Length: 414
Image 1 (cartoon, rainbow, N blue to C red):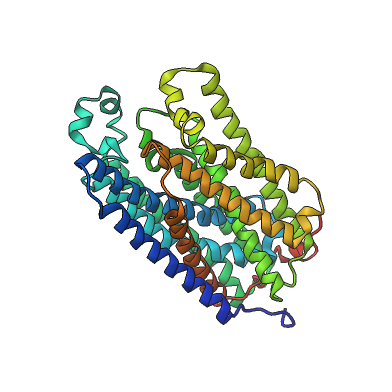
Image 2: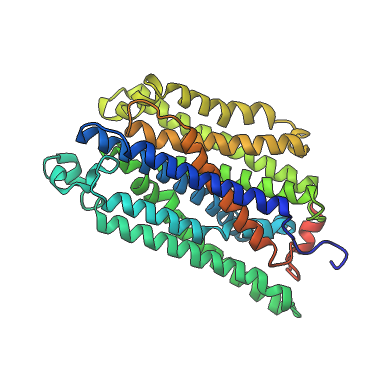
């Protein structure tokens, strides 16, 4: 491995782009705050404007937290499967997952500020007086309350951060401490498997279960869908794989990751294609059942999204997240072409950013707000991720040394 470029050195252009995007994000947040808090109007209009500001921060922070956390899910899922094919770019997924503590703190601060704020436009269930006179919310108060919300939010961010750190430490430990005997290798693989299993359990109890209900679905507290958490997982995971793919392509184009080849890129493309179809399956299943039953308590969620002012965003999001991956990523050559896979990765991330946008805003505002500031906030998070990933990649060798399964990745073919 001494003949390959082991360590990533962020270029001046890379760092400049990261800081420029973060600056755009900060300016966008300031501009959004001024535009939503500087006008005149009655008390209700002021609350709606304030909610519009917090909704933007909420949508962006939750979305980017979930997609960077998807990288650790990818690591743990392949670890449980004893798959070694991804080890040639393992440090990329580790670097992306290393963003979780920072983005987790940001998202938790924003979410708790909304929950404990005096404006109850986003979370109606935080208004104790309103809950008393609302039979549905009163029945859900054992679950929808500030104490439970805070506990789950903080516990989730802490567990994701700690367990992710543990998985990364197990990987990095081998760089300086090679395994000498077969027994040591077996023990190492077993420890990896155990910790990965613990993480998957936590992930299942959060992203695949309670967390989307609390953070996002409770915006529409009268409405519920048993498929909502899986739908949120599918959206965030495929966007997370797209993010990992972008960093792999960037490093390959700059002379790094020599052991990562078209076979690995092909597999990442297959993940993007497959989970785009999986997302569509969940999207259609959730939408079709509610449309077919036509029960007012259920259709209330889709009416403003499908028939109202948000219908354009809803259907554009569908075209980007299903039709485009289906038509473009179906062929083998497309999944091996750097330009095509980069274009699709960017498009998928944007498409699922729109997905999270339509999860949040139609429940708060009847008319779509101007999205320029929201997109600026998103660019700020992109810059932060670029900075954090670049910093992490520069600290450790790009290819895990001495891993028992590394040969599998070096000779990988599809």
